[in-house]
Picture 1 (spheres, rainbow, N blue to C red):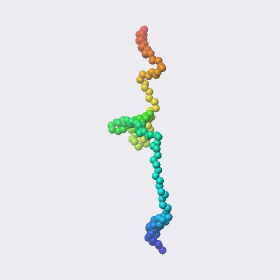
Picture 2: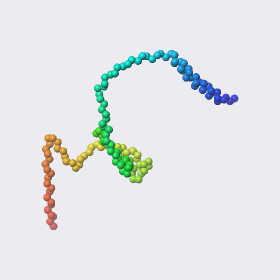
Picture 3: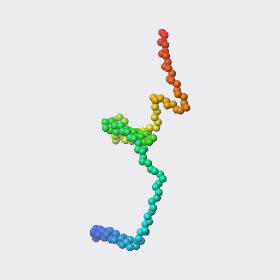
Picture 4: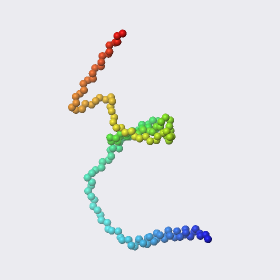
Length: 141
């Protein structure tokens, strides 16, 4: 004999309807009343002050034909550049030859190759540069 699938569904619906009614009947009368709450006094203001962050930094973008190719970020003492990922040769983005990841380049130290040396207090001023050498005499034949 084959049983109908309607009876299990009917029993499931009756159980789902009766469950919230039974739960509400159990917790409605037995729960103690909530305790009385006391008002707390305001405490003193904290001694520390929080200043707004001025270290947002400065961001400079370089564009070529409307496309951002390089971004330079200066935040406090930190300075770095993020460049667009350019694959080798004619590799298109997503090819096996291209690389989508290009890490930022941090500026560690910069040198001034053509500038004059600054004189520190307590050091002697360097003398004037030596005069240029006279031209060499013509070679004898």
